[in-house]
Amino acid sequence: MLEVFTENINNRVQYTMHLLLKELLGIEYKFVEDRASFCDGEGPKINYGSTPLEDELFFMAVPFLFERKIVPLELEVFNFKNTKAFFRLEESSALPFDIFAASFYLVTRYEEYLCEEKDKHGRFPAEQSLAYQHGFLKQPVINIWAEELRALLLERFPDLPTREHKYSYIPSYDIDIAYSYAGKGLLRNTFGALRSLKNLDFRSFWERISVALGSGHDPFDVYDWLLKLHENYGLKPVFFFLIGDYGQYDKNISIDTPQLQNLIKRIGDYYDLGIHPSYQSNNDPEILAEEVRKLTEVCKKDVLRSRQHYIKLSFPDTYRNLDDNDITKDYTMGYASHTGFRAGIASSFWYYDLKLELPLNLRIYPFAVMDVTLKEYMKLDIKQAKKEIDLLVENIRAVNGLFISIWHNHTLSEREGWEGWKALYEEVVAAAMPQSK
Image (cartoon, rainbow, N blue to C red; front, side):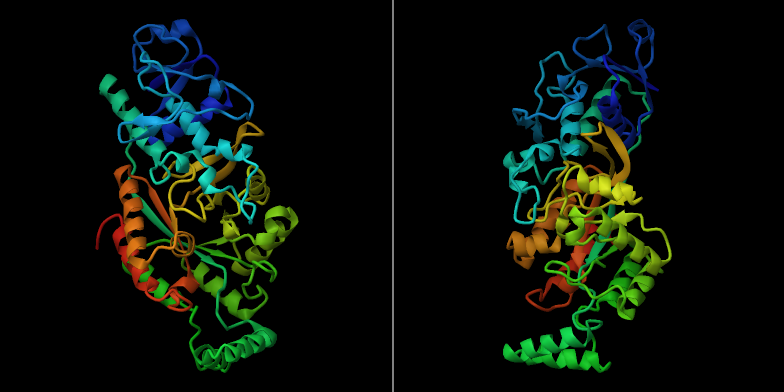
């Protein structure tokens, strides 16, 4: 077992050591508070502090993890091997930067607590992030740093047991609009048909009529195709359903319709489900609680997973609201406007609330890419999108990380400018598999 000496065993230090040593490297460790006992120990040991004690592996610590405040920081980002690092240290340290402080800074989204500039949806802009500004947003730097830490530990302590993770892939889906026509009711379908006629869109007009009469196939109904795709590759996806009341940004069919209820039950028979909290619920915990209750009633099982609609994520309120509603797994960590690693990591982790200075019982599953990010925000064509995804998958494979993608059923419909993206997605799934088939 690895012994860890540090000058102040507080919540920040405990959380970060657990993340890097236990979760990412699989190393069993214990804290030692007494200097004499630590120095007398003969097993593997590291010192995280201000000065080395004797011949232990010494990692110099900046003050960051020993503080209990959230204040603006001036960070120097520098080149470190094939990536970047910050919190630079003196040569006496085993690493030229404080890996523990830097990891904590990124994974807790420290900078987002301080940013007052938001986009039109109230979101933290990716362009304001340290990772974007210094060119490491597309690298899971915490995983890369952790592997450097592993190498150092094994070089010094060759018999120290560690565990390597295996690369894994979870496809996920946001069901914002379950059907293009089905379940929308007479009024919405009538206005939709009239709009199609006005725009001379006769294809949509006749599709809507045929679906309403029960003789046509709804173009957004790609669920049979998805079920078959998952079966072929042995995948276990997660589906997130938007069930909030109709509004400017929430346009799914009503949870009271048999079409949506039957779909939820059908998908739930095969795969994990989650709530896709509505746009309007982000600032109203009571709305969130009601949406969770409704989904629970329909699927007849506890709702433990979530992903925010429009990737609306505000620290710490969003995660506190989820925690209050017994959500234990959230998949929102990522940017709508850019691909990459918002928290600098391609592994799941526990959320640490910086204002409470403690972790919550909420596991964060970061995603790396979303379909609408590629096409609507980054304006990539299909070939460019595939290249972007391949780069992300390659970077995640290199650290045996977790790749999570977000796709929407309507973007697989071959409609409204998404022609060709269904074939692209099948290529993505094949390429992202842990083992090619």
